[in-house]
Amino acid sequence: MKINDVILETVTKIVVFIILTVAVYLFFSGHNSPGGGFIGGLVLASAFVLLLLAFDIETVQKGIPFDFKRVAALGVFIAVTTGLGAIVFGKPFLTQAFSAFDLPYFGETELATITIFEAGVALTVVGVVVSIILSISEDV
Image 1: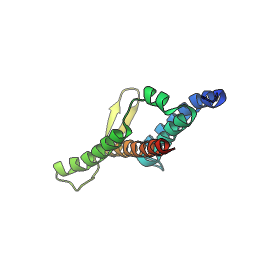
Image 2: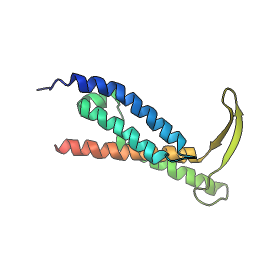
Image 3: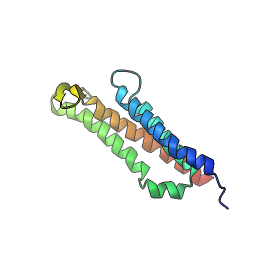
Image 4: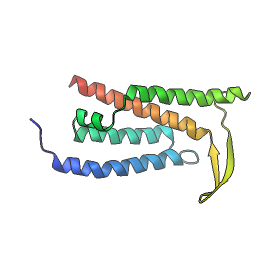
């Protein structure tokens, strides 16, 4: 028997977009202030957990058809690859490179390889947290 949680489902649809916005802000602000891939990934994973609580697992998996174990593996691959990229150029492992570019509409913008590393960390955190939640929910 399906319990009718109209209020929870309606609020979840709105709050998930707010959570995703905060996650993106935390991800991009982490280079120069508190935040980054780990915290952004945790907040992003909390949006998925909220969706899993409000809707059933089958509905969420139809809407978001990702194998989160593969998402975690992709994140680890990206993080390690950015570290190995520095070795290719004769620098120590995980040495970051950055440069400032004059982009149209944005002005002078600093682009750094740490952002790619942080994206790998965020994907790893999301994949691991959601995989753990899904494995716990299968036991219940």
